[in-house]
Image (cartoon, rainbow, N blue to C red; front, side, top):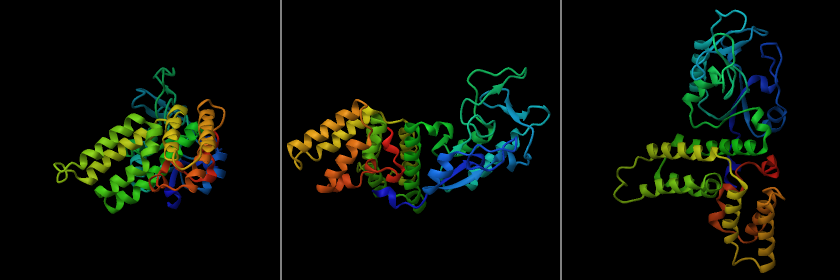
Length: 326
């Protein structure tokens, strides 16, 4: 499949998740998933913003205080320790330096790195409802709004893990096109490859993005549409669409579309077996990999050029086995 030809994508990661002893207490939060499994498929770039701005190991913990939308990062013991601006500055600096990464895995609940529901206290020391985002993570993500980001704990959920890594590989596939200068043909071909993946994640955006590129082809717009500008709008919408997790219902819809290409190529018994396994998947009896493996078997026997290029069939390396658990 197309994405397997891409070099190892780079993913930035909170350094403690890779086993670095950089936490406030001198410990780490090593993630076996990242440090043992995913390390075979990605080049990880470890970052610890708190150490980078000069806080020692071990150190006084910091916490978020004030407005949950824009909290301050201050010391839990010495209240005059305020590292908000240094964390913001470092987030912006790293956002500029790490311009070749394709994803970021952040340490959950961290006042510097947490992505959501990090405790934010009012000035009387009472936790506020809902929480907020770590100061460094907020500054970084504002500069890279389309970048796939996730917290380590959420990656234990097989659906969220598959979704995040699908987005990482899509992001990686886009970068060479962006760097060399997008053409209209690049846009059309890229979208063509991602059609069924989009259909599985977000059927509404699948149609909307098709219309966006379809309008580019109108003769009246040909001279006006700037591929680079349109490409950025398209890619932002694509990444937002892929962030929505595919469901059994939407996967089933795509599986039925794929099976439609085989209706004249395989016999009645094979068709019945395909439909049986798609039905079992829809009911939650078997994982996605089961009907998909059978469809891919028949498609190898009866190749179709359009389907052969579809990222949906293999959006990430097969050995990661991400679809065995969804």
